[in-house]
Image (cartoon, rainbow, N blue to C red; front, side, top):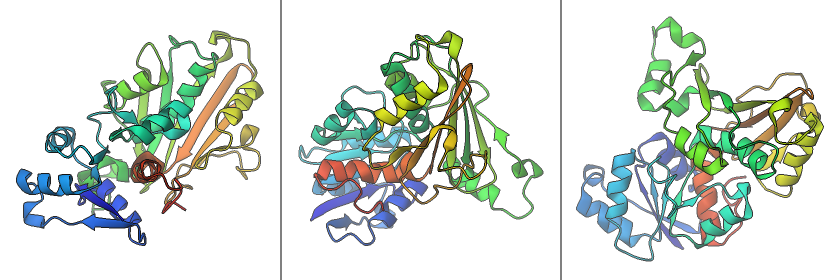
Length: 314
């Protein structure tokens, strides 16, 4: 039985990870007293007694917790932004490439991708790797998310009585183009430059879509929209959680709409390719609390444990 410690269990991601272990007999959760959860001595004791520690903390606190680990057998899965661009850490998106999965298997340090970065890199990494998208392409990312991804304070605002009328509509943010997920999107995707990023937080609890539009005339090779669909279908063939919908959403979209919340509660991600041969659109849809956070973290744990990666996620 694997001993698990969740540092930051009180936060949204930590709580979701904890809930996913509720019915697992192969996991023992190490519990820390509430009054000692920020005590470095007590935290160090828990971290070093665990086989696997999840960090569900702000960046600075995650770095501090990693420094408390002196047991070479303790393996850390960090859900913060702190280590996602660190080459010494595995990047926890196994479907991107065989090399990502192999590093997760062998590493004692795994950084779970950010939610927007998961949706973006699921699009951009295959496009760059296949040679379709030049690394210097002027990428623009449009994304919408449920408000659960904005943290406890924002959740309280959205769920408060008499809230501001602006919360009734989608709200564009990250206006300075300095969103915390941009460095990992650039690094993992292989882009030369950070993309323009337009994220919206919206008045529903969870679920996300991320969209990248492509001008065919600016691509590295001549391709049709269907060619791009075929590339994605081949790239993600056989994966458990990332599925490419039929071209133009055939077989998945009953209407010509892509709602953002239909995969809430799952660890699934769908990829849609649509548009026309001049302007090719690619969208990912997933749960910002699932494949974009806690689900991805548990999937990484399963891979590190050498068990079926879908355990506790179906």
